[in-house]
Figure 1 (cartoon, helix red, strand yellow):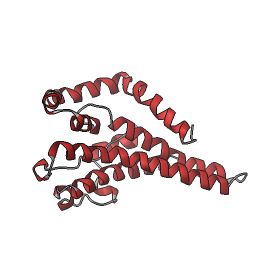
Figure 2 (cartoon, rainbow, N blue to C red):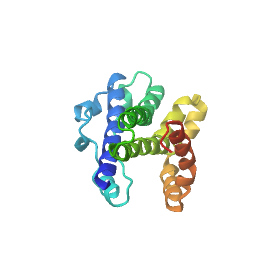
Figure 3 (cartoon, rainbow, N blue to C red):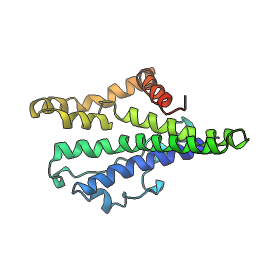
Figure 4 (cartoon, helix red, strand yellow):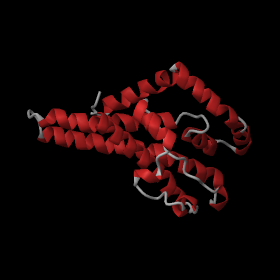
Length: 198
């Protein structure tokens, strides 16, 4: 089960980072492409420290995808789209996995394989929901910060960007105090119920 959970997280992180890189490429910036980041190979996306915490803590992160905003036609809007691509890919993977789970459990209903199928696919759904919701928190360096910035009018955007240096400290405080879990878990549980895995 540990191997299944680890592989589920590695796959989820790889798809998340690939999505950032691919959308950046579509919007005109090939920085990530030139660094070999438009790939589903997890080795291209895993951060050494993030992988260690993934192994020993159960939560990790990938290498940030570099973006040269000067290559984008509309930097503010496009940065938001690139940022949104990561969490969106996790939500899509969760929905696709839920569909797969539904089909496989129907086929294996009443057999010993039913339990195995649920044990293999359910973690993939949950972890993708967690990654998607967590990364949409409106704090730098998370994706949600850039998504919010893309929605703001210019004057408010300038003020929003000025908050960026404080984001990592707020995030660390939330993680260390358990506030992050209290914020995102109710949302994750809600969507898990919608997808039939909670």
